[in-house]
Length: 105
Image: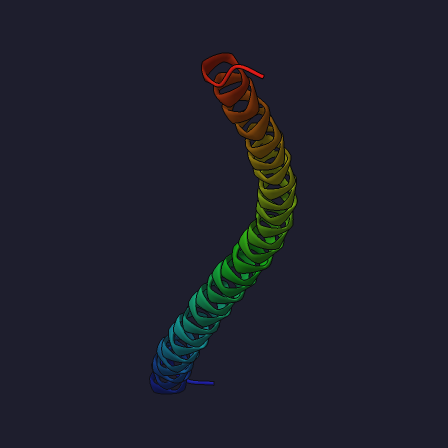
């Protein structure tokens, strides 16, 4: 093999190395882009899952608070009814005593 053949072989090897380097760089860029896309998808899925979980938790808390409020309202209405009934009886008794004290028998 002559000097020209050796130099030609070296040049071919350099060109092959440059081509391999370019191919590897493109492959690495594609892998990096795919990894970034996958990471973005994972983050988006996590955010959507978190939002859905938060909505579900808030809805459950709202329903529980609504039930508690209904119970308190019901108990309060019964108490008001009892007080009004008692007040009516006492008013009748007070009116009767007043009339009895004013009107001699």
